[in-house]
Amino acid sequence: MDRRDFLRLTSIAGALSATGLGLEQAASAAALDAGWRTFELVTEIQVRDPGKQARVWVPVPFAQNTDYQRNAQTTWQVQGEGTGVLVQVPGYDVQTVVAQWPDGTPDTQRGLTVTSRFQTRDRRVDLSLPPSRHAPRESRETLHRYLQPTALLPTDGIVKSTSDHITHGLRGNVAKARAIYEWVVDNTHRVGSTPGCGLGDVRYMLTTRNMGGKCADISAVFVALSRAAGIPARDAYGIRVADSQLGYKSLGKSGDVTHAQHCRAEFYAEGYGWVPVDPADVRKVMLEEPPGHLSMDNPQVRAARVMLFGSWEMNWVAYNHGHDVSLPGSLLPAVPFLMYPNGETSAGRIDSLDADDFRYRITARQI
Image 1 (cartoon, one colour):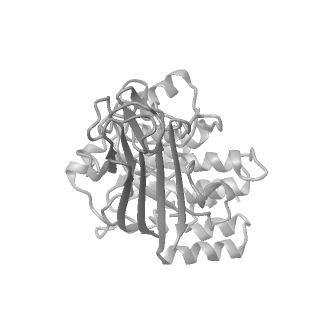
Image 2 (cartoon, rainbow, N blue to C red; image 1 turned 90 degrees about the horizontal axis):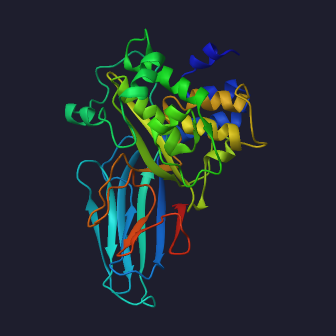
Image 3 (cartoon, rainbow, N blue to C red; image 1 turned 60 degrees about the vertical axis):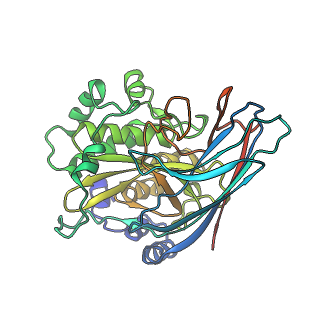
């Protein structure tokens, strides 16, 4: 089956069965699309850094209900003499539990447990159908926001020229976004040694032609190129909370999800609303799906490539769409995005990937 045949597929189940992955997986995909699942996500933190004025920020699922995520409720407990509060960061939909402790000695207990419960169901926008006047509409203010450049997602210079080259001669947001998606899949690659989820420094990646990284890098390229083409687009920062039920061992995580953070993307098209995409996971399948280092024409890779333009398997929860996030109460510069727990003391920012000074564990379970 050639690539054009794949692009005619209209469902996750169809893509999976067409590539020979089995009727059982196709049936699982169809069943998942119909129902909601409830999850509990728990983040436990111990601040080991002996510095004074200790503060911690933990991202939590966004509060507004959508057609793929709803009923998020978050509670928290602070250990020691600290206090905690749930804060909405101005400018984006970023929610974070903020905890702080009075000055103390290195022996003072400083811990935080954050528990979130929420429901998810698989998300899909059928782009084989014509645009509908009944599709969800977004406000002009929001669409304008997701056209703007950020510190690491510029829309001028090499980003603009690259975007113009990719979308030359195309009309409409869907056609342009599809071309950008295919270009990103073809021209990026996943680097397993990249710390965390990467930085998402798009200008650096395009200028140096060093297109390797992880999800925050690859998704950022899609978002920046889309914005440069005049398409509202945004990153979706979150974490995996369950194993994949679509036959992909590399695209899920349950139990201890401390290192399962994952960034996705979406773009807006009139008549469809926000459309989910995930070019980074196509590259993850290529690198990590057993036996590893799969070719672009491997059936599982081809199925993932089709599936991840227009759909998300919601064994993952979205935290926010924020960029250049000013952490409430922080005296330090804004962070590029909030997907990991963050912390700081009077000595400076605590490395969110440092397990010695900033020890945390994140667990997920289906209820």
